Image (cartoon, rainbow, N blue to C red; front, side, top):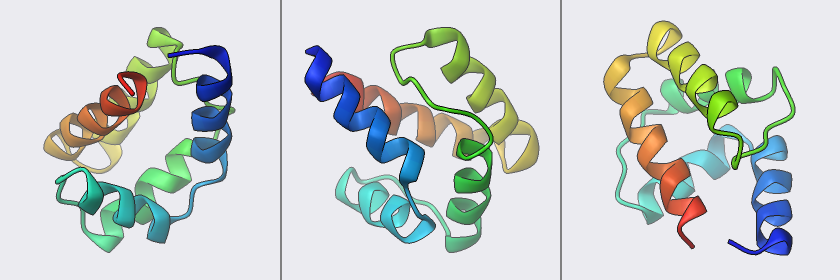
Length: 86
């Protein structure tokens, strides 16, 4: 992913709403409930996201796994990886 695309993805992740997350999950064929999306957005807003930072991604996914659900964390990981592979 080129630096400009990376900046755009990071910008979007740092400002995403639960509704937008639900739309993206549907677009990528990932099932999330509205409650899951709200909790995930709360977790994402706790720090400035850099999707290319693997350590940060693992830490965020671990929080999602503990606070939401391990299978949801796995689905969010797939979504993040699809962003990186664009």
